[in-house]
Image: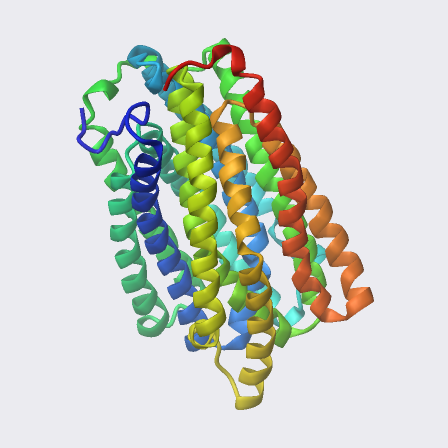
Length: 452
């Protein structure tokens, strides 16, 4: 067995969750690093219009990524449960079935992605001077959907086994690859925004190959041909877990695109400032995402082992640690946000000041409300780890409703600054569903509770 595999059914919950989350956090930092470098290279090297084009493509790109991650994370829940229950034969069949489903979705999403690029950009009222670059970036990214699907499935397999170290190392390698290729393609070969997209996909391929190499070394994952196939009962269960998560991410992205369509109406400077802060969004939620992944694995393994009391202890610990982390990150952003944002913004002195004003105002609002986002990630992931992906999906619907209504109504009442509150209100809407759902769900396991 790989030394990186970790059983989360034994030992104190807080150190286990933190140890696993820190590996994921470091990996997410490197993943966000190459996203940030993309933005820096585009913003500084290609100008405000190119940065705005990157922003105009963000939510559609995120929708495809979110759908992919939704399916693969759903598959990972069943993997974690089978691993926690020590059913190695069944674990291999779950992985084999997941590979077949992922291949089918990969083909569908690649064709759909290419077909919807221009229609969606027009629906979003993307300005004419940036729509060319936005569509070029998206077409290249969607051509790489097979690579993105492969990496996310492999990373979910490893995380389900408690291995956060290998995805971390994969991200380090990918980040270094992406940064090098960004500089080479954009500044060296003058490939423009297409160079940034190509660098990202090549980096993801490198990280996928890295994961394959290490998975092949895990003894319990010695597959045979019969492990691969679409077994009816298992396929139904995997789709039941993955489909709500994919839908949840998809509908959240649709809400984001509605917000983007409103933002697009405020001009290129506003779009650029909004984009600069949105690129920092990934940094703001790095720890939240990591705690979330840790909770899916922790809860899934402990549910498989029948240790309900440990689940409750782990969730309490994660909420506490998440809140402290959110406050610390918020303080850093409020104090040093302008310096960080300056890495993304270029142009004439007037363009710079106008863009910075938009970006920092948005960043301040998100930073102050960050604990709400961290609670969202912990509770949503805990419920998913219990094998229920429908309730988290409903929280995604709540996000969609709050984000959409806020984006359409607040600018009318407050002017363009009203759009900044759409994201915050979406978090509150999701938390209202998730807090209630968690307590209802955990009470349902009382009869199964045993000493953890």
